[in-house]
Length: 187
View 1 (cartoon, rainbow, N blue to C red):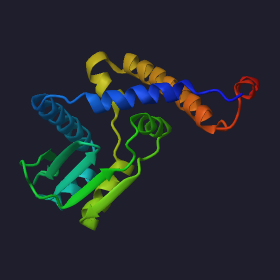
View 2 (view 1 turned 90 degrees about the horizontal axis):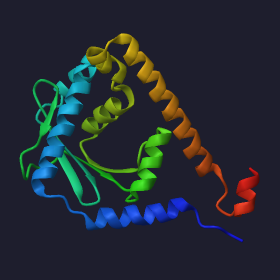
View 3 (view 1 turned 90 degrees about the vertical axis):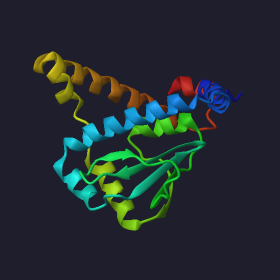
């Protein structure tokens, strides 16, 4: 007897919620502003990243997933800002997987989502380099607020939890789709 995964029910609920909920434009704008601030904070920790972006100043990259999109322009300082409304993008990146739960699972595994890329090849290459080489140093930021030892302890705890979640998600993804409930229990 085949059993249905509880994740498929959750996936259906998430799909319906994403389709039904349309946030107000002010909330979208404020969220995008916070994302830009966070991205710039991370970029400022990596000098080479900013140097790469300086070469792309004035270029606009538009990222889209479903009906959500965000256009970013590269500033002369090698940072990012929201592009002006109606700005023509030099690069368009569209996340092709529309399933939010599948995207979350990919992120937990450390995988990149599938993208449709159109536009400037050099800008795409520089953005890909940023994605591959720039990481947020959470522990360093926490240490500025709570000190080195507590930040290190919390970071280790976070890494342990993230590893356990990755292992759980990886185990779930690795199980055969045709396995019955009894087969899953015996594994």
